[in-house]
Length: 342
Image (cartoon, rainbow, N blue to C red; front, side, top):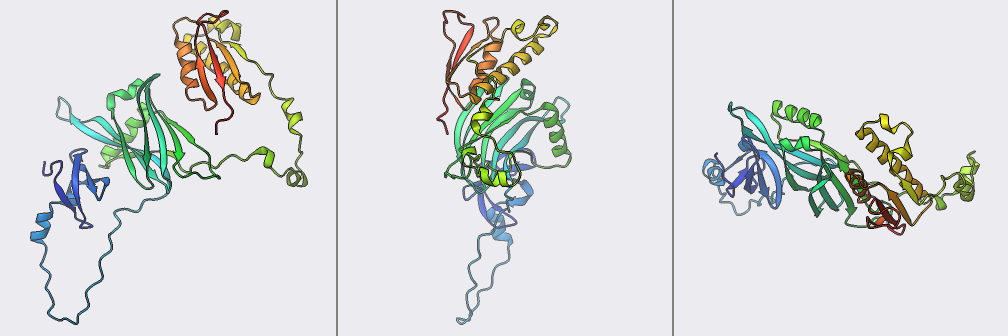
């Protein structure tokens, strides 16, 4: 290849100097210009010494009265729209036994197309197994490399979990924002095929457009204005009477949830159990319970693992434990909730 990693280059369109970071595929590579990394086509850059020798020499004027031209402002490499936070997938190609181009893996970048500096926790899962966990900060209008995602791993149920926090606290906006993305093989295959056919460098997936506003406190709503507008206004004490009754214990054994459970497949049973747990957990939040017990049994441990995985992502869960219980042995998990979290 014409360029090697570490080569000094010049961007043809802007005359800015940079360094080659690495090749993405046969036609594109990543360069670094003043600390900013971005992909370009190989024919958009050149060696600086070639530009020096090939460009026409400027004629120096002998007139001392001629004013010097004003310094040229640094050109903007690209106008970035403020359209949210994205994942960018750059396909990296390889050859198969027939010498045809195939996708080996994707280089995945986080693109911050907002004016917010963001702190984010990131985790990659394959099914329920955590593969990567990290915390980073990405500045406004910058991008960050996350990982290499092998093409063949798309069939292993990958999931990318993000928890975004504003680096600068804004009282009008939420304290944090959780986003989860599951790359679907059919979706990724289709987008990859379109990228290769159109000879583009990458495709993007939007995680969110705007960081959410902080939810309004219902106790601070002007009820008088609502009543004057014709809405019926009820006291919170009366509303709470319609809440589901509080329960601190749920038994997720299939025979406790359905009378015809024997006609269900294992997958249908698991789905029924997870939905029952989610309903139980939501009722506990409404009633602001401090601790709960979920009976999941011992069995193969599949239901317990699914419940524990869900609990790790619940905002109000301060801790949970699966220890020897005098009534349920190791077949139950005790959950402790905290409503003081922001």
